[in-house]
View 1 (cartoon, one colour):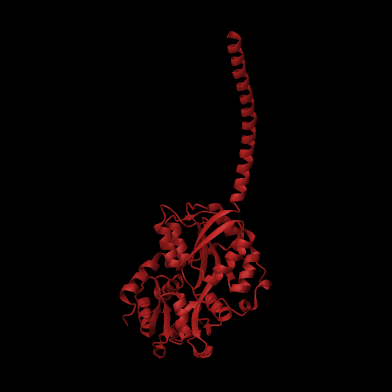
View 2: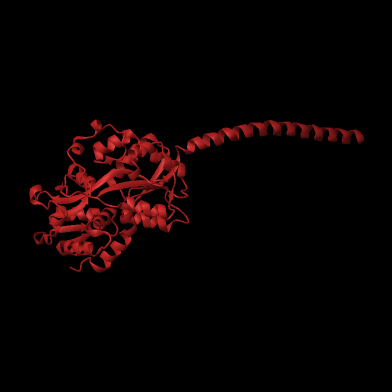
Length: 362
């Protein structure tokens, strides 16, 4: 009996020693493997997983850029929500406590200044920082201008020749253009908010009353406010109006890629040249993937392709101008003298006044 018990104890001890040895060996391997997997996981995380983008970009632009990005990073699942530039700001603001977006793609510098001041944007210094002029980026790296968007006078070229159209902003107030002007709904549009704020600013930013009077006269000539860009394009193409105010890039896209009867007049006194920006959402869930997209978007090869295919004017100063397409070389980028800091500060106040006291009342 004693011998049996001794054999049993011996067996248990031996078994424990074997298990301990295996455990140490396996544990070492698992630890090593875990490090390898974690390292690989971190590396893979840069090129896989999700990326949620909120954008005000035209769908044509979204489709091409996301397609190019997916060719290079096929394992990153990109979800894009398209809306007006002002709506992007409001949505990111509403989601501040639980961000749903990772990357804010496209909007006015005024909107991005507001977003930065409200702590909605993550600081980030990308590799291309030195190639962006100080006036085209945030000093703390919370946003960078991706491209320049001159805001111009848009016409239906089947109805008006360029030399027959209004040649400058004040020409729009001539009574002969009454019911010929169709405007994209202003409050939801970063483009329109910029144009309207610029018109107030040039009349005298210290006292906006002169600017309000200017907008009253424009409202008197405005036939309709279209609810979105698609609606605006349809109404102009159907000759429900002959004139609008819009950004140069989208006009060229509609004209050359969608065969729409559109053209533009670059205002003689100059245009508000909007710095169309991008940024990382504060506390984004997929921050590393957003940084990958950031770098891709500003890559010189990407910028050259987008200039050629999508009529974008890059903010990067290190891109060889000889590589820019012919359409760009024909444009003189004359800018209105605007204080963008004042524009950002006053825009909400000015636009609220326009909406409540001017829109549709003249």
